[in-house]
Length: 138
Image (cartoon, rainbow, N blue to C red; front, side, top):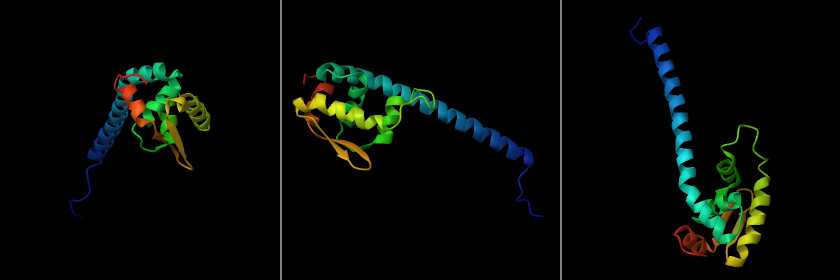
């Protein structure tokens, strides 16, 4: 027998350490999400006031403000991550929310494209949204 087999106690210790590390990682990821939400709060309030929209619609617009495509799952998760499992509305709610958002921001020259099968992307009026995020009026 070669010395390649590990001591069972060491394996148990390693499994225990790994479990603790995974738990701590999950806790830290939750804290990061909370901090990200807090940082976005000021932006959300500004967007909400500038465009006369609800908090949820403002959050979506803030997430789309970089002009990069966002899938429905990512937007849905960002809106409802604080709700207990199973308490978030169906993902189809994103279609309705984006539809309502479009109606509110269209007069400002803001255009949200549907990326069929994936999600949404801000394609027009990015400068208008960025101006609001930078503290200027719409």
